[in-house]
Image 1 (tube, one colour):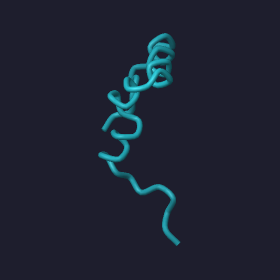
Image 2 (cartoon, one colour):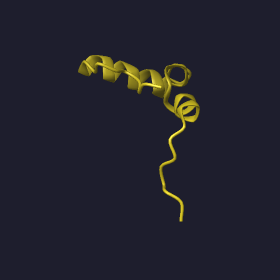
Image 3 (cartoon, one colour):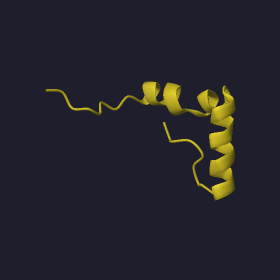
Image 4 (tube, one colour):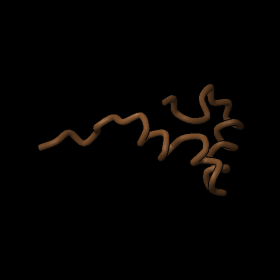
Length: 46
């Protein structure tokens, strides 16, 4: 049986990266909420 989490930087960036967030209204809302909360990182690092 394979592990459930197989890290891949490119796949993660495509899925949860800044440009992906900015491409949808919901993603922009996520960034807005994270900025409002004062998150040090608004999107996960690569």
